[in-house]
Structure formats: C-alpha cells, structure tokens
Length: 383
Image (cartoon, rainbow, N blue to C red; front, side, top):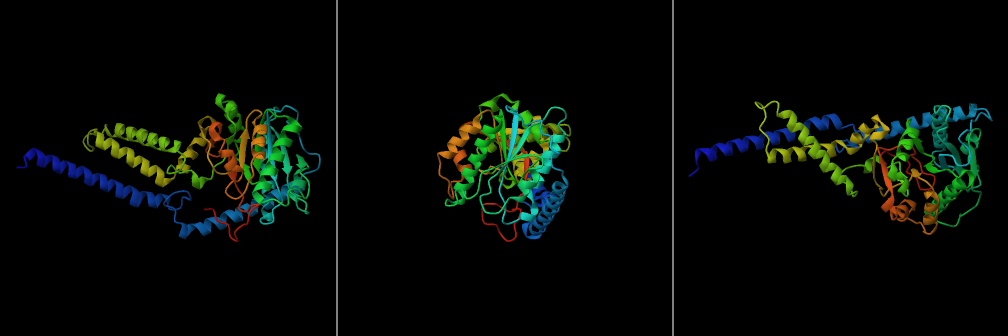
C-alpha cells in the first residue's frame, strides 16, 4: 500500500517537475525568443524575416564608409606620413596584405583599414605603437589604386606582375602570403609581426590588445595567434573540444550563483539538492548556447586583460600574430605545402596548431563581403 509519506513525496516531486517545465517553457519558448529574435548569432535569429534586411544594411554601411575613406585618402597630402615606428628591430610590425578586387571595388576595404590604423597610430603618443607596411600582391595588368593612395603615408611593397598565374587561387594566395611574411622580416626585422588581410578592420583598442597579448609569457612559445574567428562558428556546440569544458564551467558557475541567491528566499524556492543543482547547470548551459556564445564573449571587451587565449581554431586567417621570429618558420611550413580546395593555407597551419592559439573575442572586424580570390555571390549575406 502507498503510505502517506510516499504520496506526499510524489506530490512534491510532481510539483517541482511542473515548476521546472514551466520555467523552461517560459524562458526558452517566450522570453529568449522575444529578446533574441534579432540577434544575428543567436539560434533564435529569424533569418527569413531579418537576414536580407541586415545584409543590405551592412552593404550600405560598408559602401558609405568606403567612400568616406576614399575621400579621406584623396585629401591626404603626399609626405604627411609620420613613420617613427619604421625602424629596423621595431617591437611590432603590422603588414596589410592586399590585392585589387574585381568585385566590391567601390567598398575600398584597404582604405578603410589603413584609415583606422592611421588613426590608431596617431593616438599612440610619443612612443609609436607599431610600424605599418602594405604588401600589394596584385599580379594582374591593372594597378591597385587603393594601395597607391595609401602610399602617401605608408610604405608599400609590391610582388610584381604576372607571377604564379598558372596555379590555382589557393596556392596563389598562399604564395602571396609567404612573400609578405618574408618581406616583412627582411625589410624591418621586427620582433613581432601581425599580418592583416585588407578587409580586417582593427578594433579601436587593437594595439592595447596586442600589447597585452605579447606580455603573456606563454605567447612567446606560440607558433601563431589567430586574432579572428568567424562569429557564426563561435558557438559552444562546436568541434573545438575546449569549448565543452568552458560551457560546463559556465553552467556550474551560473548554477552555483543562482542557488546561492535563491537560498535567501527559502519561503519561495526549494532547498538545495543535487537534482536541483544539475537542472540549474543544464538550464544555464542551454540558455547560453541559445542566446549565443558570441554575445558572452563580447562582455570581455571591458579590458584587454579579460581577453581569452584558447587553442588555435581551424578556420580563417584574416588577422594573425606571429610572435618572435615565428613568421620565418610559418613561411617555411607554408612553402613546403601545396594548397588547393580543401587544403587552403589555414588548413596547412592548423596541422601545426599544437603550439598555436586563438584570441577571443576578435581583435578585428571582418568587413569584406567580396573576396579578391574567390567567386562572389551576386548578393552577399551576413550568414
């Protein structure tokens, strides 16, 4: 026979389960969808409603800022450059790799990036933050007009015309990258090198971030540090194993904090129990994933010291830091590989990622909607 005690426990358990289900339905089915349906990197983002609009808005903004940058560089006088950072043995060299774009020429990505770097350098004070160089790898018959414009203020090195025209675009891109790495070391012999692609717009605190990063002892033993990873690939549910540990850690921390606060209201909430703790952990983890890890990472921008350094990710090389003399080693590694579709330069580097890292959140914004080496869609979209 069912004793009164068992019946009472069953009622209490049923009440707790009902409350938990109600909380989940309210949170994941009502509150978060209402709050996150416009958040681009959230699971709740309504692509069919907002993606086209957001993509068009981003293109309009990119065009407007490109035209403003074009006007800025046209107005710059020749010889107005201040090149205090350009001396042999500079602490940091930023090399911007560029080529003339067939599509999206009117967006002037290089001019936007160089304008931002120029502004950041002017804010460095008496001690230069870095030396800056542009590496123009345009191999076609037409001139890279944007590179010619920024030459008013910055050193521009050119690879030459007609080189490597008989190789695939991935191998050509790799050879261009290797050329720029080697020229960076040969010309200025810097202690550290950052290589940016010409659509990698640095954040306003870019040099503070890099300076703090180089101050971390283990970075000197790193082969490279990726300063960018696509936002759409920053989720916890991802092939990167370390994120699972981070995800569980967030759940445990969040659950502990919530249960600690709830303990002050014993009349309204149940006492601590292991099932309640585990439910809270899962609740926090699911909520964090659905909202989007990207937005949690953005909270770290409060200070460069809060930026996280993680094992290197697989995708993409728009912004790379090569500490010490590792740029020469990376050039040798890339030289020894043949790149093709499915084995681009980022994949080659990832195979040597045992001693490489990634920075989170991103230190640059990837503003390029049109590639200089690949076939572009008629209407580029953000996702």
